[in-house]
Image (tube, rainbow, N blue to C red):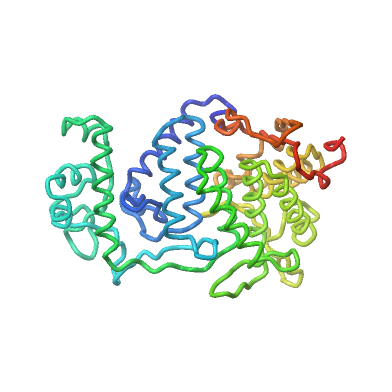
Length: 427
């Protein structure tokens, strides 16, 4: 969004290069897809092998936004691959998404993902030389772990490999895809890492949002169905008397919902509206916003992490960590709701969050990147478009595919019930 607001080509190039190196690096599972938790060195090659649900959601969103700006096929493909991984490996039979996959299998960190050259030769035969060159597999290994000779699959330059083997890029991609399927089948015979099967409301809210955006930008119906199923799961299993619970496992929901649970689920609901134009998602987002306001709001601006008034010190977080802070996400939620409903009160509430944390932002801007991504919207205002149509609402293709900062689209018509909206929208 900084590139789009300011016309900064260098910013876009930084994003493009980072996303490309991440996708081709060892931090990405080149066979089964999905990102590992983090890299332990600066080239994205050697990861800590744990996989987290929130990383998949945030990465998918980043690649989708990049695709909207660049049209780069790699960004599109990576978003779809992450969706495939999440729906295959992290989706519970009940519809929610599991939290994480462990780094170890068979007592060896990363053992599930590492390959010896001899294993690839045995599995692929004549194509082994090409595949080993493509994935930088060495006879004596490229990973210095507990056992020598192991390799982390990662890619330097598909174009260079295609040239070396006198192939077009399409021919190379076809052969690599065939080899990927073979190696993935072989990998399934190994002892798999354990899955942390907790279902957490906040992380699932992020995944609902990412899948909804994937369905909107890429017309990916499977992602939308999964997002709908996850939302139904949360409403059935993780809500009680209109209040959210934080954790579900083995048939039991527990722990009162915290700020992140509400803020991230509201974000997911707003993405669901953008993907479907079903006004019920806005109504649900408003209901959760009201609950958040009644139980978590600080009169000086922003929201407490917990709704428990008996806690000696109620923390009020603004800094991003591995995930954005709940206050930063809720600030954007309020701006979006305010734009969708043309409600200046919601926008003022968002500005109150920015004001409440302004000193922290000034002293540590790098720790508040998500909040800063919406700061211009809060200060200068956004752009909103309200469309009233006689039939069922539809999203114009150009608005589905294009990333427009600080913009909301409200489409009213057909059988929709907007009675919850401000009166002027129903006139």
